[in-house]
Length: 347
Ligand code: NCD
Ligand code: ZN
Image 1 (cartoon, rainbow, N blue to C red):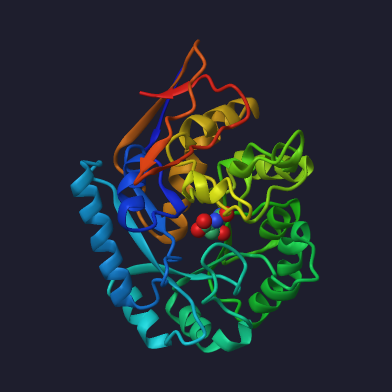
Image 2: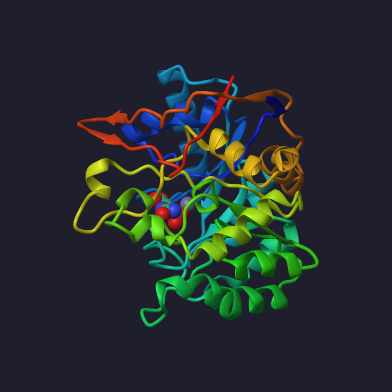
């Protein structure tokens, strides 16, 4: 069996910078036409100029490493409490960025410059609503007394719903949704709300992370939830509903920074996302909706044309190996182990 799809895009990707960028960019460029590049560098990508410079560094890394030159990075800005509305609107009008990313301060890797209170960024968000600039949100509250498994659901109630009532014209993507609450909330919205779903949250639940030993390579944020939530994510992805699309959240860290006393959050799934998705959609008997999820719904939301190329996935009789670990300086990045046997390859 083989299926051919419009070439996919990744609507949530961490490429990092420097040596890490060079090490990982080829894994995404090999299969994807475009990717929405997360701005959580240290220091973060805050201004239109920062985004332009970062885009040039990505393009240079593509050249230097011989990665697929047709791959296009689409840039975002990191929303801080000192972000200027004019700078955001100008960067969007100039085509430098297509979205702004909201990280609640302290929610995840490199989010220290994020937003402590949504009220502090309302002028920027109003300007974005007025000019149709998309807001991508890391939807977790950060208060110390909120259980880590409840942080997404609490964000919906206490931040997202009030924000959407106040600014109904703001176009929002709930990034890497990990709960049934999240997919149900998106489903219930009549307009201006979409969600990305990651590869790994479609494949693992919290038992994969914690049963039989702690598996640092499955630790990411938002953290993997119960199986009932994973099943809700699979149903949403496989439904064909245009409000759900792929954002891998591929987030490389070195092996030593993950296998550590205080391991970093992030799963590196860029290299095997497409074969993993084929397996998930096949199991759900929904291979006919894979193209919508991976290649069509995202561009539609962002008002872009789908890619003109295609990708062909073929069923194999031999088990597909997990991609090789990637050397970075004197360390490695360990690719995502999908916790099941995969029998698909990209031709
Ligand atoms: C991301 C990272 O490493 O930058 N980590 C993660 O677990 N997903 C940050 C993020 O998107 O939350
Ligand atoms: Zn991310």
